[in-house]
Length: 206
Image (cartoon, rainbow, N blue to C red):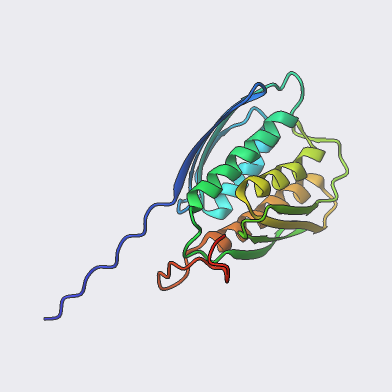
């Protein structure tokens, strides 16, 4: 009888990040190879809603808690939550060996349609075009929704392009954007088939 060695179990890709400033105190626990479960308490209901959709469709397990200066406005909390989550994503990926690196996806939500493209290049850059017209959605300023995505990309050291291609309802437009981003992230962080552990770059580093 031939005996074969069992395949090694891949190391868990997870991170814990704490970010404390004079404006916010944030803790994040992230598992990339999760089940899409989340526990969120940012203090901003619509931000919780968007991050829940992101975790669900990316397949991440995410715990994020934020105490922020919401008596000032929502900007610091929204930005710092995204920076902390992006830092956790960067930390969980480590040297970025054995990942697909690139991801792209479309996501509809009723009449809205969004497209997201991501590259874990190590070079932070974001081009975000959501076309939102309302001032506020559920306590989150619409100008901060795109800023959350760009801050996430900056801290994750990723290139991220997100465009909402159509849609009449701003809630739908914003949520479709986060779902498309989630699906693109899911592709990009996936492990390469066959278990290769190369850095996916001709430079040998990302």
